[in-house]
Image (tube, rainbow, N blue to C red; front, top):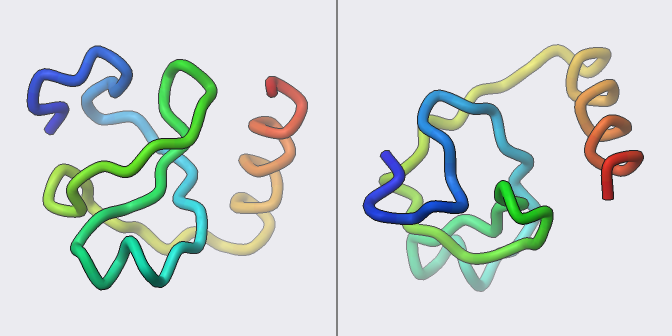
Length: 66
C-alpha cells in the first residue's frame, strides 16, 4: 500500500535499511522513489527474503543510482 505517499510505487521492491529503533515502533526505514530514506509503516509492505546473489545485485543497483 502507498497510503497517499507519492514516493512509493505499489508492487515495487524497496530496500529496507536496518533500524532497530524504527522496527520497535512498527516502522521500516525505506529508500523510496525520491532516492531518500524515510520511515514508513511496516503494514504498508510485505517483507520478502531474496537469495543473497539477487539481494547483492539489487543493493548495487541502488548504490549506483544514488
